[in-house]
Image (cartoon, rainbow, N blue to C red; front, top):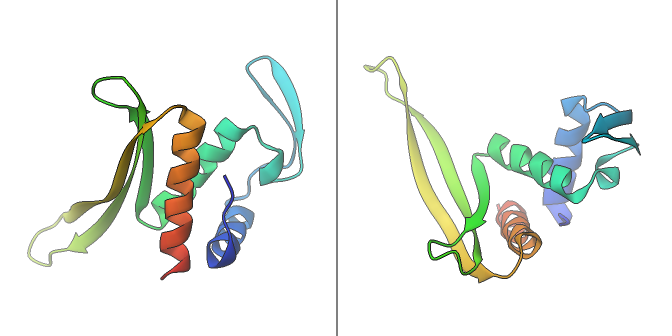
Amino acid sequence: MKLTGKALGHFEEWYRNQGFPMGTYSTCGSTYETVGFDDLPEAMQWGVLVDFGITLGLFMNVGLDEDEAGIYWELIERKRITIPSYPYADITVKRIDCVSSYGTIDEARAAAIEKLNEIINNK
C-alpha cells in the first residue's frame, strides 16, 4: 500500500498538516509506539489513506461482491457544485473504477491505492 511520485508528496504534506499524534497509542488492548505513517498497522494505514483520498474528492471502498464469492474495490469521485439560487450544495458522484473478484481485502486495498496513486500522479 504505497504511494509514489506526486501522490506521495501530496500525501506526506497532508499527513504532516493533520497533526496526527506521534509517540504511543493504544488500541484493542495493545500499545504501539509510532513515529509516522509507516509504523501504523496496515488497517490503520488504509483508514488514513481513505481520509486523504476524501480530501481530494476521491473515495476508496472495499467490500464483498454481491454473490460474496470475492472482494471488490471501487474508487468514486465526488464533486461539490454550488448552485447560486439554491441554498444547498449539490454533490455529484461518478464511479471512476470498480474491480471485483480479489481473494483478500489486502489485495483489493492495494489495487484501490494503486489506482488512487495513478490518478493523482496523472493530474
